[in-house]
Length: 466
Image (cartoon, rainbow, N blue to C red; front, side):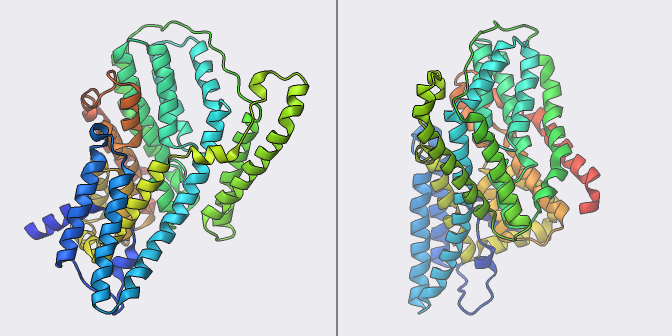
């Protein structure tokens, strides 16, 4: 029993991709879980991930240690296979992982490019200024920013959404630390919950969709559980918000020329990706890249018509040149490269055989429900991306209801701690001194109540899916 628990703990720390490697039954597979290379690979990954978790203190970008670790792990694996005169087995496994990564990376790159384009066209700034001008009370802003975070994050990513809403809170909250702190907690919970019921809301939901575990419309079964996850803690925190009105501001930020059309093109791109996947049975990334072409062509149109707009007397806010490749360059490359490192590291660990061992402990001995709830708690400590990769790599035989459960828990479990999601980590930096790890921790029991309520709600209203 002790060995099983140790194996599980180690395997969960390493985390994810490629069930193919862990379950390959051909003669080209060498069991390395008890080999020196296997132990060394675990140590390398744990050290790399420790550096990732310490990024806030070391200021070492999280992509750097995991990329190095990926090279070391696969180098050790390839050396063992080469010594057994099987040089191509490791090569095929690595290529498989690279293909998985390429699809997700290109999908995310297009989404990030659109978000950057909307940001540059001042779509988000215009929304922020509109909210500030309306003169809402602190309690109204608490709910408004929370609900906006919940409903924007399914389309944009939860990180961008959280940063936008936090900018509103900081602009109107000023030195009111209690309002800023509670609103930031509410935004993190709302953004993570909103991202859980959409294939585009979080990287984890995107992975589940692209793997074909849940159909596109199937994610919307999680809408009500996600609402419960957000509303339960928000309703309790509401009573701690000051009964005051902030000072109204008159800032008015106009959107740049082409902003609304870029929003429409982004929605059209999402429709294209879904259509390619559902009706043509092609990878969604092909639809997203087709959508990138929409933006590129529209960018060319803006570039060619900018001088004409200027000659016609348009204001300066409408004639800012548009360069789509600048938006590509401004993508979160550290995140994308971190994603590569995680995929390849855990792909190597899966090829060694550790994830098959963890799968046996969690999904055979514990049962799917207990395992999936535990995944959510774990995602509060370890980033939910590698956690979900681990589950997809294990590829347990589960009904749709259980796949939706693990999608929900991995998405909202990160709200339990401020370090449990990218949104929480980003807001600690943006609202430094007002929203902190311990200010969030104080409300963790309330957030946990929402977590438990959302799991129970899913189990109740979606019982037919289990």
